[in-house]
Length: 154
Image (cartoon, rainbow, N blue to C red):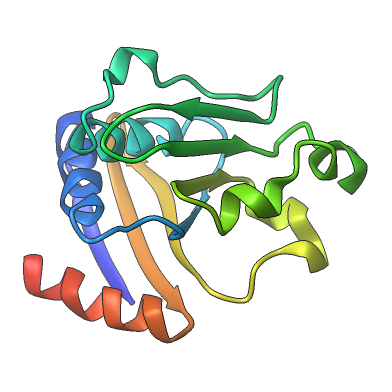
């Protein structure tokens, strides 16, 4: 696990961009944290690395998924309002998780048993106004190797 403290939104986005340099199509990043901790801000930082206009990155709370076109497609899921798996099954979420883009999933715990077995997990917590503690953990070989590379970027 890696723990990073950011002092403002700009540093949170910069951390996401550094992580994004290591991501490739088919990668899955789970984003955990309370409402308003900066999960979408983190996606903005990563998306910017992939040449996505960060002003287009908004939380897909009411539609479950936004797709952003850039160097790779970014699949931005927000499962906060997910009532049952039928809702996400209708959009074919597995095709996105294992497809040609990179998936960022807010509120991944709502997937339950449908969650992939391997992923990178980013947990964001408030410290004080604008300041965050960000923990990055890995599940699965690909992501454990990725975590080691992230440590080298620090």
